[in-house]
Structure formats: C-alpha cells, structure tokens
Length: 448
Image (tube, rainbow, N blue to C red; front, side, top):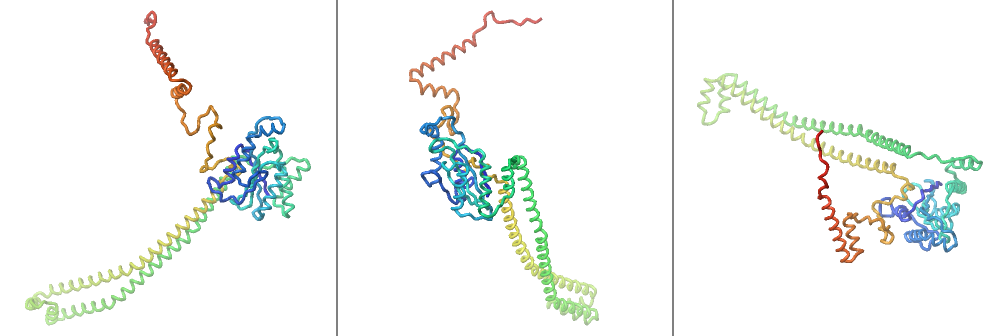
C-alpha cells in the first residue's frame, strides 16, 4: 500500500476534469467506479457542484454555527491516492473501505469526499478528493502531519492483510516512535529530469540494440535469396545449353563436311556450289566453281559463321528468357520481406515510443490541477467576473473608444454634444497656443 498526498488546490472543477476523465481527453474509460461520501447524490458531477457550493458558502456556514468568520480558505481541495501492489487484487468494497479508513485517520470523516478508482496503471489505485470545508460548521480541516498518519495506517494495513511490501516504511515508523527524525528522500526537479533523461537514453539504446540485432539475420536472408536466384539461373542456363547442344553438333558436323567436300577437288566444289546455287544461276555458279575457287571458299566460310552467329543469338535469347523467371521470383520475395520488415520496424518503433511517453509522463499528483487541453471549462457568468477585468474573449479597446463608450453610456445626447464641443475647443486652443509666436521674437543666436 502506497499513499500519496497531492498538493492542495483551489478548483474542484479542475480536479474533477482530471480525475473523472482520461488524460487530455473528454472520455472517462480509465474510471472504474466513483463513490460519494457525505453528499446527497451519487452522481460525481453533482457531487463536485455540491462541494463547490459548500466551499463558496463557508462564511455563511460559520455565521450560522456561531463561529468567527476569519480568513477565506484559498485552497479547499485536498486530494490523495491509495495504490496497492501490482500483485494484489482488492475488490471494489475493499478499496472503498480503505479510502474511508484513511478519511477517519486524517480526521475527515465528516467532510464531503469523492472516491474515484482508475484502471490506467498496472497497480490498483483510487483517488480521494476531499472538501476541507465542513458542511455543518464551515470550518476548514487541519491536514498537518497527514503523510505521517497515512504512513502509519499503510503499515498497519499491510500487516493486517498478511504481507508487508515496504520494509523501509516499517523501519522509519519505528525510528519515529523512538523520537528519531525521519523524512522521505525527495529528489530535486533537476535530478528528477536527469533521472528521466537517463532512463529514456537507456530505453532508446535498447531500441537501437534490438534493431541492430536483426540486421545480420536479415542480411543472411537476402544473401540466401540471392544465392537461390543465381542457382536457379544457372540451372536454366544449363537446360538451355543442353537443348542447343544437338543443334550445335549438327551444325558443326555439316559445316565441317561442306568444307571438306569443297577442298576435295573440282567435283566437290561443283557439288557444293550446286547445292547452294539458285536455279537461275546454275551456269554462273559452275563458272565460278572453276575460275574463282578461293573467293567461293571465303564466301562459304562467311556464310557458315553467319549461321553460327544466328544460332548463338537464339541461344542467348532463350537464356535471357529463362533467367527472367528466377529474377521475378527473387524480386517478389525480396519485396515481401521488405514489407514484412518495414511493418516489424514500425511496430517496434511505436512500441518504444509508447514506452518513452510513459517514461516522460507526469505523475498524477503533478497534473491534478492541470486542465486537459481538449476539455475547456465554461466561462463564469457575468456577475462572477471582476469589474476591473474584461472578458477573455473580447479585445481590449483603445483609450479613445473607451472614453466615447463611457460618455455614451453615462450621458444624454445633449451632454454628449456639449462634451464633444468642449473637446473640440480644447484642441483648437492648444493648436493656437503652439502656433503663437514668442514675445520679443525669442533668443537670437550671435556667433562669438
């Protein structure tokens, strides 16, 4: 059990905006239940209105009770929280009973109070908002040594329930009972910020380490995927080469036989030329076979090379087409992995951002009087505003317009005309005075 006393406040509405709603929102999902004490209603909003009314009429309550009025209480809002250990699971009745016990320990049993249970933390906890003004006498409650009272009560509460979670509190209370002075160790704002900063740095360092640990496995996956693509590509090339192997064998055999037959003699040349000659050029081909053997052989070799080049181009085309399938499969798998890793990185980043926000999140006690940005209270009625202060939603008028409005509101039409005439005459008189020459022509400057 950890009781925490928040700073006293002046606005019940501000406290209600925080405790009865989610942080910086109009929703109330974190509120588990609310219970009123010494109030004629169970509705929390009406309960706050009753507390406001009691605090504002403290003077009249004192007069009715025959007490001296005294000074007006500036901060009637008193609040504290009771937090159980995360391993504990108190029921609603147990939480309400604990809150009422603390009211009795603090001497606030006769005060108006609102008990609010929250579920936005890992540990069960309730907040107690108390009106320090007594609804019967109007007298303000004295809350001195409230932390010591709550500390002793929390120690006794844990002992009754069978398990003590805070041994330091037991030692401190024992030392206090013997007359020794003990005080909780509170760090300064600078130290608290430095502690938060160190915690945040360690948090993001863990994020970078966790992200860096995945680089090696991801690179291994990409390398394995690339090796699979290369292996499949080589397989396709081998299949294409095997398909063209008999074609090359036949072509080389045919070309070799043609050259052998051409080089065997005149009959072979004639047979070779006749096989390749057109029907209309039979005579010319025979003449070339007899007179231009060297040129015919060079043409034959050139034709054979051109045929082999065409076959090689066909083979390269089939190899390229066969390699496209492994490339497409590799690209599709690579893109799938990239999307998967990107989603994992985004989830990790969002998770660490949420944890970082929780690290830098203010404690509830520090925000109890801080109003949410999205929930703005209604402006007070005109009769409650100060007379010397303009409403916030109106711009401050100029001095000239303020004077004119004042004249119109307080004078009749004739008075307004006379006042305007006096102002005009005063301005003309001042103008004539400025333009009037000095007597004696003023001082003259004479060079020395």
